[in-house]
Length: 225
Image (cartoon, rainbow, N blue to C red):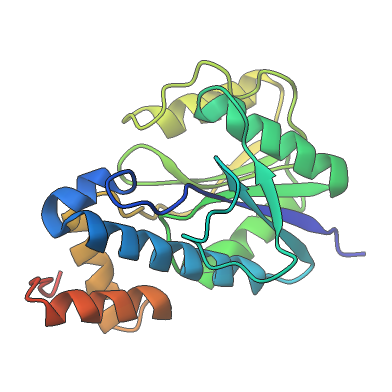
């Protein structure tokens, strides 16, 4: 019998001046907010395509209209604390509902299906699966269990985030498998890199592609990264 999963997509409201601030330094606040909305739309659509899974928006405040949501979308507030405390709270809630839980960020639009397939396959016979990002973070975390304090006191947005998370999982007695490395879009070079993948057909992210076309029409040079 196929085990059902709960996929938790972590996203903040896409408010100009408060979202994707490092990217905004290159493209402006409004464009960064538009891109954030597009990233979320593609990340959400990709999550929704996964079989045998329920999808939840894990966000920092009640929906304010900056993210496009279908009626009836499950929205869970992350609550207080650092990212580890908030992620742990959401994952424990997800695991109370389903045997498998995944956390992914909205700044990773169009995560390739091969990585999703690998994550589900690996989690069939292990306790945790993690997908490293090349900036030191991770693009996906999948768990079968989440003991209290599992993600406490981990340095976030740091070169050692993924490494420290893997060490913590193992110290909790969990078997851990790793996915291939991917990347998130935090700065302009990341956006250029993603644009190149879109042009070569290596990722599918129609909302982001549309937003990038509008940026190009305004004269923002994305190049062929």
